Length: 515
Ligand SMILES: [Zn+2]
Image (cartoon, rainbow, N blue to C red):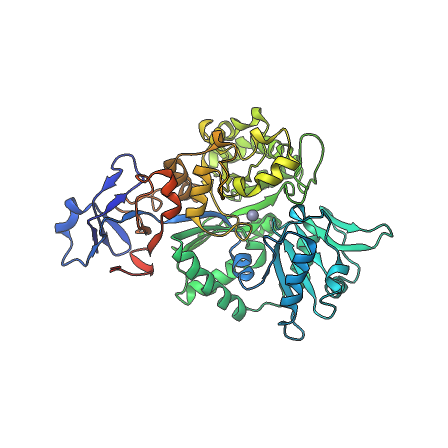
């Protein structure tokens, strides 16, 4: 196949732009002028001046949860507890007997008057249906009495928080490990393979329509590897998956000797996921001022990294607060003699608040910064309030880039929408609305944002010579845009649209021709 008459951005400095692209099988064969004659009777696609880029990678996505949440009650944008509860009341009427009502997106910090949610508020509108509502940041779970009863009082766990009222009764809000364990035990097990399959096929279509050809998934703990495997076997997987497993699996991995990278062209199981702290929104991010919740200590992380290295597993560690990030960097630094010779590509997820002296350590230690450009403008009001006086070193993507850190971008869907073009705009403009950009000195150029979305994630997977660029021999994973984001003025970035998406030489969204 030859894509011609457009702008092909290879994202490789040796040949940044070509007028066309030749594809043979699942690979890029080369620029049109040089290789055209080598292909027997190629299919020709007229790009009509459109732009082709390497397919987008979403380097931080909870794909199963994102798929699940698309059909759930959504509480984003509710301005008060009453408004959130009214949406729950409406949704509760449609729940079949015996089923749960699941929802997401609430953020009590945005409610007026400022109150915390309670089970009583839910009991008043949904007394008979178990209700489980995840906070927008994924770190707090709001339950009604019917749902809480499933735990039979067993709510407290190391690394978790059970909110209680003046009488010592659970209020219905669980945080961190208490929230996640509750979901693992009571909310998710009722979803079977057939329901997951339906949910995921729909989600894959949406991802393809947004130009996503690869993801770094964070839902290993939820059985994502199994679900992607089932889709792959059915020929229904339309993106490449670099799958995480929870660090708690390390013992079994050591026992059986499985190493990172197992799998095939579309699905590979690659890295371990660990949590250092909570989040900004739940006020559980661990800061140098001593506040926050410690989920994994520096010593515990060092121990995980030390054990994972000979077993061949890189580690991705969630760290939001400046203390959590320092502890994570320290742990990687302390253990570097064990993992560096093995070429392991570790990463810190989020890196939202950094002490100035820690910014340069990502490059020095050799750990990638896996960030979410959309979080900066989306969290700006919360950060201005909860991290007052510290926001000049929050979401400091430009500082990280300038200090040599390898940046990769993800959406953290369902926290934000899975939409790389929205992430690109957020990284470049630092705003989501008509306000001026927030901390604009931390804005990236379009090119830097694209490298973090297309090229750098491939390196983290050890696939930098297979995908992420449109060079001869690379996998033909590409997205066609209606215009060239590198040539259009910044105010036009919001207009850029995905026209079509290709995975391994096959259209997975909107096959040509387009006019
Ligand atoms: Zn996440």
